[in-house]
Amino acid sequence: MNNSPSVEYFRNKGLLPFQAEFAVTFLAEKSKLYWQLVSPVGTGKTRLAGAIIAHESEVSDKKRFLLLCPASLLTQWQYVISEMLSSAKRGIKPLIIDRKTYLEIESSVPVGQNPWPPIAIILMSIDLAKRDDMVKNLATVNWDLVILDESHLLKGKRRALFDHLVKSGVMKRVLLLTATPLHKVENIVKKIIKYQDILDWEGKPLFPSFEKKLIIIDFERTNEEKAFLNEVQKLTKELATLRRYGKFQSLILLRVASSSIYALEESLRRLLVRWKIMRNKITHNIPWTNEDVAMTEQDLIAELDEVEIFEEVSNTVTIQPKKFIELYQKLEALIDRIEEMRTDSKLNSLLHYLKTSFEGKRKKYLCIWTSFRNTAEYLMSSVQDLQIPSYLLTGSLTGDEKNSGLDLFRKKGGILISTDALMEGMTLEFVDECINYDLPLNPNKFEQRWGRFLRYGRKTEFHMVILRDQLGAFMWEEKLLWKLQRTIAPK
Image 1 (spheres, rainbow, N blue to C red):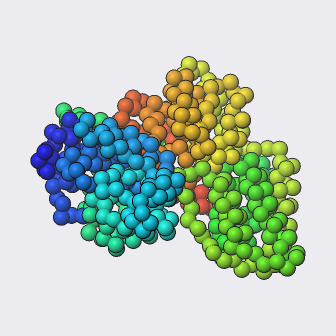
Image 2 (cartoon, one colour):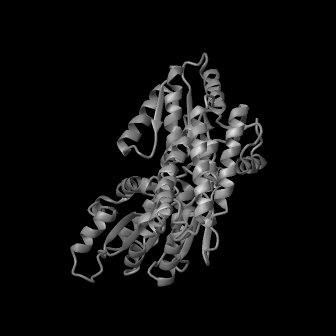
Image 3 (cartoon, rainbow, N blue to C red):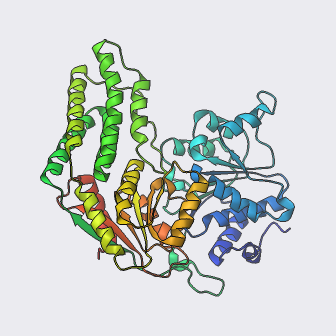
């Protein structure tokens, strides 16, 4: 086959015009090593990159490819690339590498020898690749093409991985895929695609021209709730003074508190268990260890059900024992108070909105999105009395369980309660509206939520709904809402 593919070649692979044109340009301009494709969520970046890998595999019998992406997308990438490979190349199966698989291929070669085969399509979670030992191993061979999906996540150790591979010179070519531009990469060729640029082969637009509509629902907390949340914020302010250790815990607790009372209680109890260990060490004059700190942080991270994983935030912590004991006592008091609370105004506002939304409608599709698994489970138990078909999807589900739940939701309608961990790969163009029960810290992640719904095949308008505390109890949440409203006029 000619080394310069035609647009027709990629059209036959099922690509759209913008995809085929980008692929041809990317493969023709080999002297430009670093490329970034920025296009909205759901516009076929996976199929485009899969077709490029397929073409390059057909051109040469000896090429080594590396695909890095969030773990939740590995199976999808494997399927798409396998589908794109020609019948003659189907034997080169894209290989998903986890820790166990890597140890197996490493043990199959002599000690000290490079474990990566000369002909390979390696798919790996970027959070495995960023480990120090794996960074070193990946830099032992040349990669003809490295593709990084969701490249806006290149921060902290992930970015250090990328920079190390660049510095080591092992990446012959790089293609970064994202819906959000990545900055500070030198000599990068950036191609930005917008919805209006996406046409079929007859020149007709494929994506809806619906305007983004944001609906704000205000709710008012009771005096009891206001007083309690005020105490929570006092505790987080004191925590935030304890350097990075305290700032991290403060941030997570504030996010949980803005999500749901139930999730907050679970988080406070997790924290109390770890703090009790640390308090006992203080009592017996035993010094803390880095492991004590790390375990506390990991317990709080566990509350989040997001694609983006927090980096390690501290190695050491210095807190005065007297100050820590005071914080411990305040934490105990907060837990006692939360047990006595009987009202959840935010939940009541949601339930009222759901009743109104489904009243008199034979079939409706509504999604409730949260960043916290505990909140998702709390909401699922709370909507049961509404007698509306409801489905719960969290990061604890297997791929088959996730697909089964989505299929039932698509067929029957009702309420889908989901967390950010299932954001990747979801196609929800049939959903009428999404209620954001809590907000992510990063506005880009909110933009990704839009991308799950404004996709090819949408026939009706779509609304995003946000529940807002009338008194603005959480300043970070108010600032984020202000940013969102600057670009999207609320209805």
